[in-house]
Each structure stands twice: as C-alpha cells, then as structure tokens.
Image (cartoon, rainbow, N blue to C red; front, top):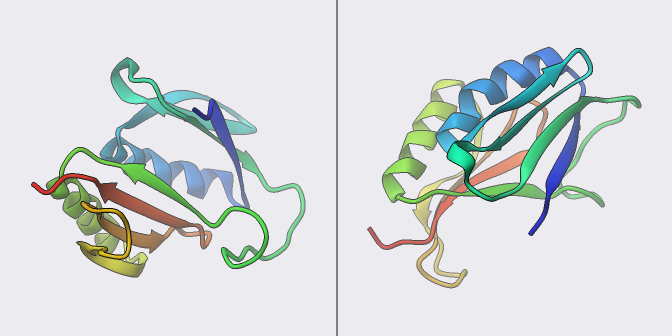
Length: 131
C-alpha cells in the first residue's frame, strides 16, 4: 500500500480551495497545512494513502499523456457517491472526460466518472459494486 503521494501544483491557494471542497466527497479529511504545503488523510482513521500538495518549483506544462502521473482514482462505496462527486465537479465547471457509467473493458463491476482538476490532472471516482 502506498504511504503517501506528493503532487506539485502551480497555485497552492487555488489547489487548497479546490481540494478542501472535493476530498471530503472522496473520503478524505485535512491532515495538516503550512505556508508551503497542505495534506489530506483517509477520513475516520481508515487506512490508505495520504495526499500532499506542494507549490511547483519549475514552471512547465503538465500532460497526462507524458511520462509521470496519468491519473488518480478514488474508490467510493456506492454508485450514488460517484454520482455526487460528478455533480460537484460539474457544478464547478470541470472538464468531464467520462460521465458516470459502467466500463465493461475493466473487470466488473466498474462504475466510474473521470474529470480534470483545475491544473489538468485527471481524477476518477470509481465504485466496484453493482448497487
């Protein structure tokens, strides 16, 4: 199991505002914040990977098609939770890569939605249950 992931972003304040609203929907809670980083952990003491955000030190474009981070997937307990995340990011005007649906090309059950965060990172909310 991964202990934590570190993600560089070009605007730390904008990232914190975005992820403070999104990550509780994905089962995360704030861990700590400082002037030069902030982080989240799985909520309610659940085991899982922590997320740390840092300011970008080198300006360059990001592409999920280049070497490096392709996307982050967050497992949710219900399809309704996936739909709730989809509604949240749609209300924010996010670029939707895939609306919520079953993905038969992956081992079933696989119900997911994909979108881009404000910095172009692709995120996924997925449920591995039929109900």
